[in-house]
Length: 419
Ligand SMILES: Cc1cc2nc3c(=O)[nH]c(=O)nc-3n(C[C@H](O)[C@H](O)[C@H](O)COP(=O)(O)O)c2cc1C
Image (tube, rainbow, N blue to C red; front, side):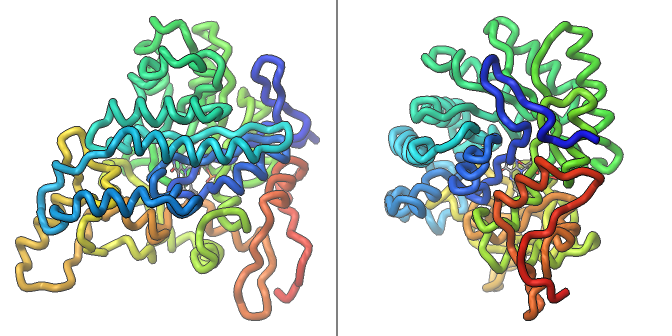
């Protein structure tokens, strides 16, 4: 019987354990988690989502404070189009976050950064170019392009000296999205080094509509394997979304995948950035406590716990401090929804907004409890303690369980057994 450790993901001469821990913004996939995965010989992701805030928390910088001060005059203004990112400061924060992480890297694995196109930051092209270039400058091993089709992202990096040496990959959820990406980038003569195929059971934003349940990762993988064979393209495929056990991973590795990308099982590890209380919410969740809804202003459906404080919260848009989701015209669907409710309830102090959420502020405060479909199975991966709470795990334990387990087994951590 095969186990994940019988396989390797190869980039030229370099080989890694074929386990990739996916990017989880905002700082849920911390540098600590990514570093641990790299130490164990896999690939860990950090995320550049809200990087200025992440830098402030990690390094005591003042990026957010300074931006808030600059735009303080606008806080009561319903129009947020004035709010821009200083590209130099954005580069600085990215260099710090990525650079300091890379300096600490040990072991044979790699560290990639997850870069979401939907963080349009009121100047999509300019800010994305800076984010990509700064990560490359700071020595990142690879960049995973996510949350968007990224049709122009390779071109934005084309002149960078590391364009052909860094590992560059893209997340897709359909063969069609992949075809469009490859067609659009054909003239650059540079294929992606890996393709992450993310199915409908993943956490975070989904590359599907609200009919996500009709899709299945094995089927999408098979379509993409077939397409690449027909095109005579040899690009490693990475299966993601709902890979919960080592055996689940093997079933993909035996059918055309070169690696798997996982996240949910790492959300309750000590190294994960979620607060301890939120980890317990994930453990406690039952299947019925999880939903896919449309409250993200990005327009993509997002999976989360139904009890997430972000749902129905009518806080004032936090763009003066953040503003990562402002589109090319300085608009965000949450601002529109919030202004509509304020206008409809002029004397109401506590505004309720049901259809959208202020994702920047809520992700920043860990109040948007996005999670994978199988979050309800996390309780089966650990021990319940005397006080009713669940024991968190080490990333090493979860990584090795994926790497070595067989027969759909999940190894419990050493620890108390008061079930
Ligand atoms: C809490 C959480 C946050 C996530 N945030 C992001 C993100 O910011 N960007 C992204 O591309 N994917 C994000 N994802 C998706 C993961 O990187 C990964 O591809 C997917 O969840 C793997 O499936 P699994 O969670 O079933 O293992 C997130 C997943 C989780 C569970």
